[in-house]
Amino acid sequence: MILPVVIAVLAFVIGPTYNVATLSLTKIVMGQERGFGTFSNFTSLTADPVFWLVMKNTAIWILGGTCLCVLVGLGVGTFLAVDSKLTGALRALILLPWVLPDVVTAMAWKWMLHGQVGIIGQTLESTGMTEGTISFLGDPNLVMWALVVVLIWRKMPLVALILCAAIRSVPDDQIEAARMDGASPLERFRFVIIPNIAFSLTAVTVISMIWITAEFALPWIMTGGGPANASQIMSTYIYQQSFEFFNWGVASAMSVINLVMLASIVALYLYINRRSWASEGSE
Image (cartoon, rainbow, N blue to C red; front, side, top):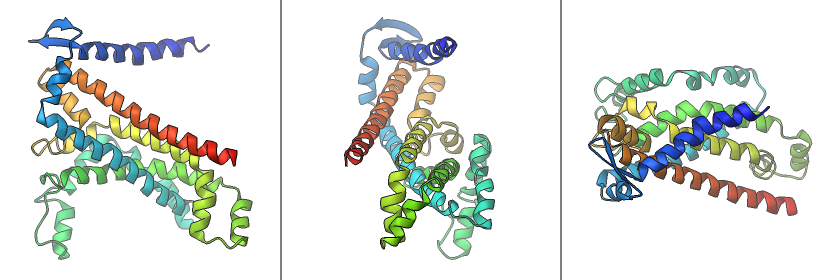
């Protein structure tokens, strides 16, 4: 009964992954394959200064985006877990940023962050917080963090709802017992709620990391990798090398590096968490 699913996985996941891996080891000149088993694609990447900038931007994008998305989602989820008319309405409305199409989100934020006509820059200037309008997407020092903020706005709602459901499922008797023992709200959150939602927290962290790594439309539509490659990340640089410069071998090599990097981060995160769960279980 699971054979169709197995065939689909082999056809649509393992097959293309194998093709990309073999292509990364193939030297391609003028669109023609000129030899297999060479590491020339990886060697050319190490000599490319833009690649190291892309790696730096990707680290900010994945690590910064994931950590902030989960932390903000945890805070919002904790607030939504409280029963009230306000939180009840917010639980229904909070998914709006997540369900909007990527193109709509990217174009709306691109306009709001525009250096001349953007409403965010004009608001900051009119309130006296800045001396003039700020080009968030045109400043190489700000563009990556501006994209991370938009990413959090986009991805955080689902994380918040998942963690809200996990927090609401924590047994009331444990929280009440901690309260009777004199634990403060912060201590109840740290020693009662967090251990109970550890699996959900791990799951949303890993899922968010995978989502953010695969995200392409948002940064590409908003900046196209600019200015001067200051917002170029792995997904956009792979697209540019493949479909604009037609460097298929180099793009495949970057795809392999991207896959290994993501798998290593996820494996390390799961290993650390499983060791902590094992120590808690033995206690």
